[in-house]
Image 1 (cartoon, rainbow, N blue to C red):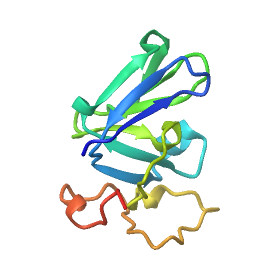
Image 2: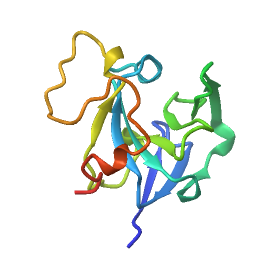
Image 3: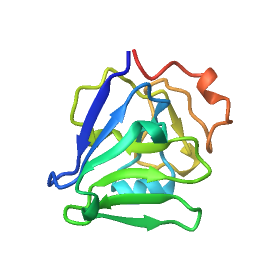
Image 4: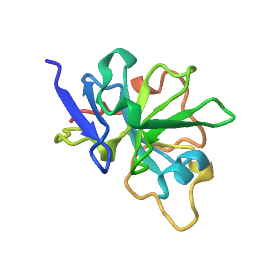
Length: 146
């Protein structure tokens, strides 16, 4: 059964819908994610493009594209990141903290740990990848839904 989740930005002007099954849930320690989120890492959920929709406030979205082609869309009023995309990826990535409905999911891995901040020690036992994992990583980690 496909469960639909809703999410929003801090000020509530932008709202979205994401429908399961999700592809993955991960912690990214790359410099871009750390800087964009202002945190030690970003926890995101991979949503197939055809299962994600902005349902309100599309006009409030702005975006920043990095030299690598990663585009981060955010609310121009409150600054909340709403979705991260790159044409090379098979999914959109939604910051897990913006989802408003309860999630029965758990993160599966840490990626780009070569770029992690020195003041945070990873101690959760999840698999760690120096950079992005190989394309078949989803077959090698626990499923996101538990």
